[in-house]
Length: 359
Image (cartoon, rainbow, N blue to C red):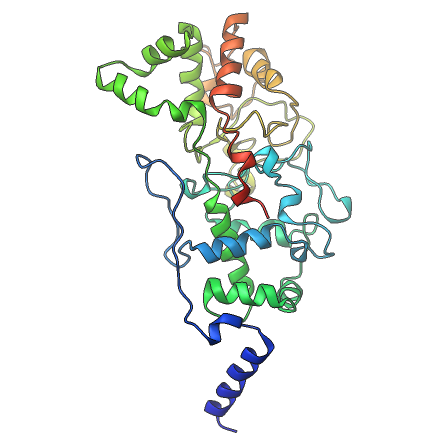
């Protein structure tokens, strides 16, 4: 039988069995995704080989919440990335299939289209690469990718959605990764009280006021509070977008073998360096640090106030003039104002309740 006849029979069969459904009666249309962000922000970054589309995001969302991606069909990506916690988790350390413990706390997920390094140790340079790690890790989702694709292929609904997203009812693992990456890029958070003040801030800056003056005028922050916030921004910049910086923040690492970024770089000077996450939505994303050691923001603040430990790789920003660990020696007012900034001004409650991100 000729290849042409085979092709005709295959297309007829797929129409009859409903694999591609509407594709047989109408042409597939590609609708590119529009990011829900303020106009003044820079354009989202996405690879040319994986443009974000409405159908791709919809498929990625279904995959994110599907237990079919785990080896024993018991957990999903959402098991460790809960929307109510800014797509982080409430556990100190993550748990994989069979209750296996992971040695890190899951990071929150938002504004990832403005980031080019992922995970606490920065091991992935793209979201398409990043999603592969938890899916295949033995102590996380532990999936065999061929079996995963076969399981998805037995679902007519998934076959249809893969066709809508990528123009083919054939499910391949590379397309699973692309769809997940598209969904993750769609998670945007830009509705904090500080975001909503942007027009006011812009107007005041146009009149010649600088950031410290504006913070004092609008919130009554002390000079010391503003000085500390500016120090924080050196590692956690940009507050709006997050950042890609790796830092050693003086945690006591005597009881852990987790060497952070050095796992990736292989360099001694990178031991104990971890990604500095965004301040955004920290009210929802605790516990804190790569190992979830701090249950509250008050504990985090006290670490920087009085608990920074000596380390040969300690970030320069956290050393005093003598090279010793910095002590902020904050007063009650400064602590209160810093917590107000973190818990109130940087919290986007609409993000954790937005139904378009949920299944």
